[in-house]
Every structure is written in structure tokens, then in C-alpha cells.
Amino acid sequence: MAVEHHHRNLQGGGPRAAVFGVSDGLVSNVALILGMAGAHSTAGAVRLAGLAGLIGGAFSMAAGEYVSMRAQSELMERELDVERHAIRHDPEDEQKELTAIYEGRGLDRGLAHELSAKIMRDPELALQTHAREELGINPEETGRPIQAAVSSFVTFALGAFIPLVPWLITSGTTATLWSVVLGAVGALSVGAGLAHFTGRSTWWSACRQLLISGVAAGITYSIGHVIGSG
Image (tube, rainbow, N blue to C red; front, side, top):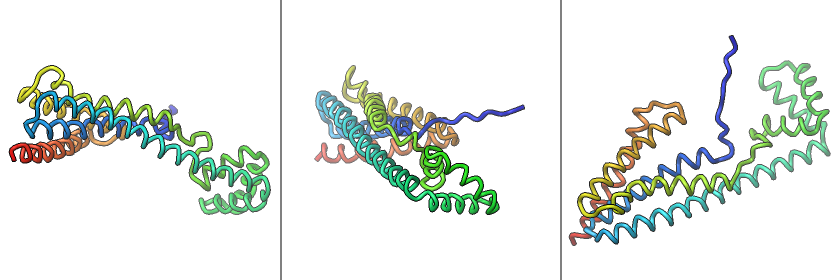
């Protein structure tokens, strides 16, 4: 019985941006909100800081993701153009490169030469093969900067909104405690989701995410408390 393997398409950048976006949004805003709460700020000040952290962070994440993905995409396109030019103007050397690659992977010289010769007869197939074998990239998937930016913006905002919710409903100690609870639940959920995404241990990934969020929140709360008391 044949077993089919299904893989996620990760080269577009969207899934990666989504995972890091929601994680960063949660960690940064729960730390910011609890830091403000630790300084005995008014509920209005905490809400304003949380909202500013959400909006500013989401735009910053989206812009950074777009720029990095665009640069990566342009770099890949440049390398493909170089390879395309070489295949068109110096096919013999390109065939020798491909033959050497296949020999390095265990094929005997005759079979490697025959296979590379057949591939080089089709310029488009030659480009795809050289891109994968020589450059390690898929010429059809050079990245989607807009997808990555939008995904990063939305997921960061979602993660940052979680610890802000209590301050939109109540204030003071009650809101602080609910921010802690929701932040912890959110961290565990993000960690569990990340484990599903990567195939790692759910328990370890969830606890790691909770520890990271807890350390960030604890430090900023303590700093805020010291400054507020002073």
C-alpha cells in the first residue's frame, strides 16, 4: 500500500510570519501592559500603552517582514538571472557542473553525463534543475513579501490584543490578574500550536513559550513596580 506524504508549503513566508507574529505580539504586549500596571499607572494609561504597542508593533513587524522577504526574493531572482544567462551562453560548462553534482551524489560518470545532457536540452528544465541542485532554491517559489507582511501584521495584532482585553472591560488588580491568566493561556496555546506546526513535543513547546512570556512579563512588571514606587 502506497503512503502519501503531504508537506506544507513554507517558502512563501506566510506560515513562518504567522507563527512568529502571534508569539511576538503576545510576549511584547503582555510585558508592556504588566510593566505599566506594575508602575501603578491609571487604567487609561495602561490601555493607551497596550493599544500603542499593538498598533506600532504590528506595523513594525509587517514592514520588517516585507523588507526582509522582498530582499530575499530579489536576491533569488538575481541568482536565477545569472544562472539563466549561463545556461543560454555557456551550456557546456553548465552541463559539466550538473554532471559533477550528480557524480558527487553517487552516480557513475556515464550515467551522470547522460542525465545532465538530457536535462540541458530543455532550457527551462535546466534552469529549474540548476536552481535546485546548485543554488538550493525553487524557481517557482521565491517568496511572497505581501503575504508575509499581512500575515505578520494580523497575527501580531491578535497576539497583542489578548492581554489587552481585560483592560477594556475592567481595571486595577482584577485587570492585571486577568492579563496574567490570558497571557499564560495564550502562551501555552501558541506553544502547542507551534509544536503541531514543527512536529516537536507539545508539552515542551508549550512550557517553553510560557517560560519566555513569564520571564519577559515578570521583569517588566518588576521594573515598572520599582519605578512606580520610586
